[in-house]
Each structure stands twice: as C-alpha cells, then as structure tokens.
Image (cartoon, rainbow, N blue to C red; front, side, top):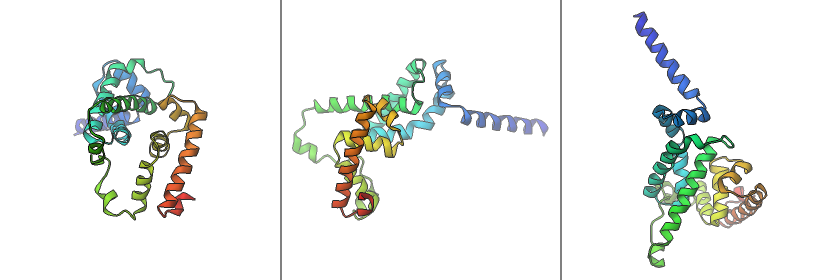
Length: 203
C-alpha cells in the first residue's frame, strides 16, 4: 500500500512539474528531441494558433492543415528560437507566414469572382447566423468588414491579447505603425458598430 501511495504521489508531482514548465524550457527540450515536451506545447497552443489562422484563411480544413505545418516547423526548428519574444508570439509569426502563403497560392487559382462570392464563410458558426441582433454576432460581422490590415491588428490585440510590441514582431512592422493602424481600425470599427445600432461599443 505505501508503494502505491508513493507511486501516485510521484505521478502527481510529474504532472504538476510538466504543467509548470515554461514554454521556453519546453522548446529547449523539443530541440533535444523530447516528444513529451512537444505534446505539451501543442496542447497549450494549438487552439490559439488554429483560431488565429482561421481568421486569416477563413477555411477550417486549410486552417487545420496549416496548424500541423506550424508545429512541424516548431519540431524542426526549436533550436533556432533565441528568446527575443514570447514563444506564443513566435508561434503566431510562423502561423501568419503559413496563412499568408496559403492565401497567395489560393489567389493563383483560376476561380471566377462570382464563384468566390458564393463560397460559404468558414468562420460562420450557427450562433453568428441565428440572430443578427445579438451583440457578439454584430461585433464579429463588423470586424470582418475591416480592411485586412486593420482586421489583423484587432485580431491580435483583442482576441490574442498581444501588446503593441508583440504585434509589431509578428507582423514585422514598427510599433508606431501598429499604433497608427490600431487608431484607424478602432475608429472604423466604431463607425461600423454605430451604423449597426450598437452605440455601447461604438462610444
């Protein structure tokens, strides 16, 4: 009986230790070929990376494929991470590059513009289409009307809670440009929300 208790205590300590391991430490372990560390990092960040990519490519299947590519890159290049930013910021930088590359490849496809307009929105969920008077649905709809550059800023700052500095690192632009885009994005979003009758957010 004491042995069983000891084993359970040891297992619990291992779980707690794994959860307490920082992303930077996990990357160092991944660079050494530790598959458990890779699994933990994936579990921590795959949903965030998926949602980020989905907002760019707007196709669930493509987003899932790109998430796999992102973490495959992490497995291959973990040793190249230099700690100049948070691991989550580094992951979103890789994800953004993958998503934009996929979008550029898609533009080369010979698809009639009328057909493009009829492609269903992969981001639409039942809750967004059930009731257009719902505030969260209106907010999402207004965000989708922003320019790609402004939508990207809103996405990173509000949905992924990234700082101005981190956004600059992910997109590859100066912080001053991030602030300028943020100003105009918020102004445009406020106008759209006001036009939709949501003065509470537009104020």
